[in-house]
Length: 63
Ligand SMILES: [Zn+2]
Image (cartoon, rainbow, N blue to C red; front, side):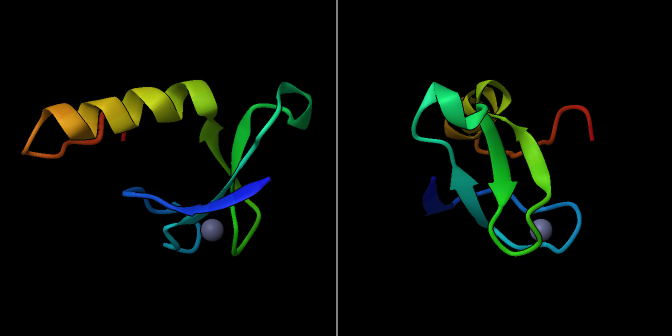
């Protein structure tokens, strides 16, 4: 797992530090580094980061 600070916030504790899986064997899920809650899959995370990069007005689809 790799610890990263992202432009996302944990819905449980509000932390923006997440653990990203480095290999497929680790499950492909992004965990909050503080409370260990599973935030989302890396697939969703990639889409979210792309959306953030493409728009100045940051909206959260699905929340
Ligand atoms: Zn958390």
